[in-house]
Length: 146
Image: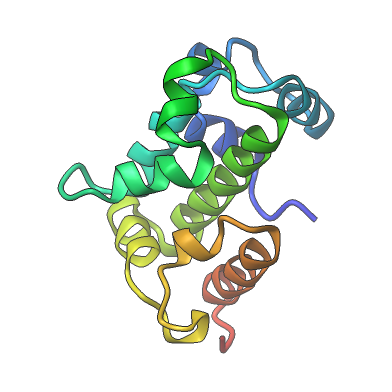
């Protein structure tokens, strides 16, 4: 199940200009991830996920790829591309569930008691954590208890 539209996820990745292609299907997104996304998706995700103030954007970027690897390679590895897609999906879903970019950024960056007082964006760096965060966001979106 893909909980948010592909258009919102690709916009969070920086759109066609950043990705270098228009991704119309999940298959096309999967192929782009397997090939390796351009490194420019990293700051695009961070900008959508966190306000400009503070160091959260740098910490989010580091969840995708190390700073040294980011500087060295024009494309992300397939594993780093998977992390980028996962975080972009969570960020897009947060915006959808919470209504505004500002509310989504605040929620993603604030410790959450149901996530062990960890920030949702940090928990979402792993597949299992992303599933937990998605469940919380879907419950919020549909007015269900967490």
